[in-house]
Amino acid sequence: ALVRKLQLLLKCIITWLLVSSITGFFIRVAVNGSAVLMFPIAMGVRAMGSSSSPMSLRVLTRSFPWIGVHVEVLRRAGRPLGPLFKSHLSFLLFQCFAYLSCNLAWRFILYRKSAPEGFEERIFSVCSGLELFTLICVRTEHSAKIFPKLVTGIMLFLHFYIFCSLYPLHNLALITCGLSCMYVMVYCLNHFEEPALRADPFAHTTPTAAHPRALYLPQLSPSWTLESAPLWTMFYSPSPPSSFPEEAMRHMSAEEYLMP
Image (tube, rainbow, N blue to C red; front, side, top):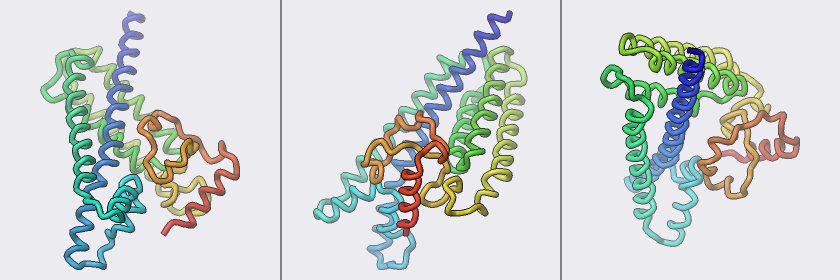
């Protein structure tokens, strides 16, 4: 019995790692790719003569440099922007199809047990919500330490239950775990994220516009100042400011002062 439970626990860990990693990968691709929609909208507003719109090309270029730099290069060369936008949107649609294909494959590979209709989709929705919350709201060092561990424990408990039991109470277990995850979200927002808004804006441990998350990666390539970091960096664990030399943190402070 102990060996079987250990096997189930290992299966739960592998299942959650796969679902969480692939969902996080897709959300990052979707955020990077969907930003291209902002540029045609801004150009349309500008063409209609609204120069006071806050969504100017300069702001968008600064906010999304991995697209804005290419837009500026094509505009200065007098080249059409349509192919650039079309290629980004085509890549985004391709990734959407790949993610939906993964969802279908997970049903037959990972969730082969009998479950209520649509149960797997609900798990994927909860996972997407958790990954989106992590991307947007988990910004302080304390939240980054606590939130992933607690959420992982909750979701492992859910998977252990559905792999151990038969059909009954699957939805109740999902609702219970979903509410537990929501409580952890609210706890992190109230105890870590909200106080960080009132913290010293010049401290490297305070999330700001220059560094939205108070955790850092070494800049392994100079191109990262203009291009988005490669997708493999989502598996590279960030580090607190104390783990970097003072010279590197001074460079971050100088970059913050240059923010418009």
